[in-house]
Length: 252
Image 1 (tube, rainbow, N blue to C red):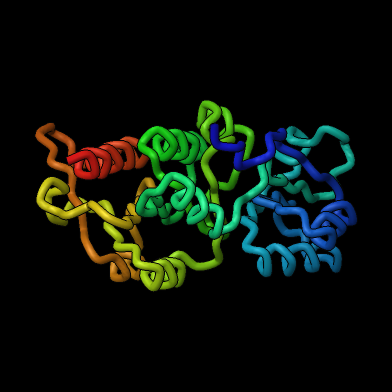
Image 2: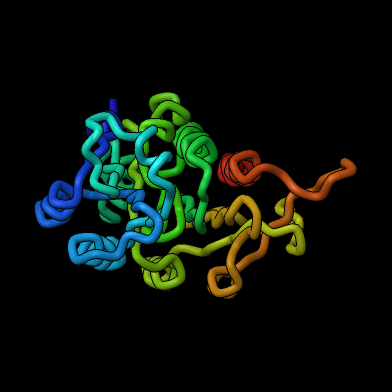
């Protein structure tokens, strides 16, 4: 049996300005920070600077919202949400593919914001035999407790890597032999594409889809044939449909 890839934990709230600053200094991974709207003093400026440097999502909210979130009653206008699980390294993905004797198969997620979608995609990645999921540091959900629950345990076995820049990561992975197909309605039918070999599936944001720069880095644009009256699928459903087309083609 393959070893567990992530260390299970629970979502951690860090409250108070000094506590958040020390969390950054200690190297803790912070996925999101809630800051009192309009607060701009010295410590908060330091926190915002650290958040920007580390790719942390910042949300400015009302005092009422912070009071509702707080477990200590001493948030001082700042609450940070630390990652519930540890992130993997890129080499973990390739090591897993090598261990299985398979061509690398990865998901790259371009700014997925809904934790239920991220959890469902991680679950799909595991069940379709993908070797890992890559997510961006900025403007996207991280490994929260909700994501862990939605993954139905798959997060324990599927490496999730957090990167600074998706477009640059695609370029780097191309140098390792991967080809990339992004999901988009205006592309070629997935059945008409060659999705065998080392492959990366790129899934875009729930509302805006794959960003222009990331789309331009992809080798193929894959569309899913649809016959209904609406023109798009939920991001996690689209990921599942494309993933199992990869499974189908690999099994031929």
